[in-house]
Length: 195
Image 1 (cartoon, helix red, strand yellow):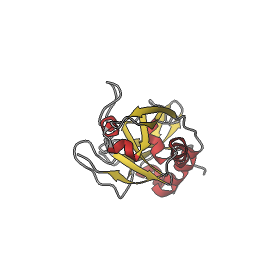
Image 2 (tube, helix red, strand yellow):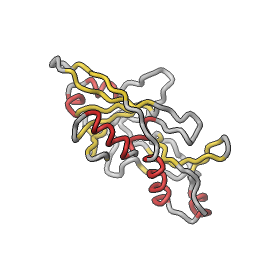
Image 3 (cartoon, helix red, strand yellow):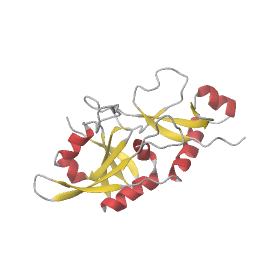
């Protein structure tokens, strides 16, 4: 039986407190840092009519698939979806302007929609960010699921990017993480350590 159209969803570190939902850490090599520098989880969702359904251990057993197989299919589905990248210049203390890339979007309650933070898993979106920024390595932050910021590593070293990673862009936003991710070759390779 073919799987439904499943997409990965980035969730808060404390999202799945029970056993009804299957999850995995966004990155197995990252450790939480001080404050809100928590490692988000990845869940998988699909539509059942107008509602969202999440993959859980029972669903995996009933469908005879592993979480790794679902994750692989969900990543392929995500890669088939585009991401619109907005660009702006951010002044630094040295007076030089540095490019900042922004992806915005929310899934609301629709599992067929993609939140901006979900693109941390989307190789094609991360490749677009590499190209838009013109750099081999960049930093990325998702303070909430609706916004993903990306910029040259120098932007994080000057401080404005750290502030953005720690500030929710609007009042109703729920904190996802204040981790500043390091991205190279369209994948997360680590995080920036800061206090």
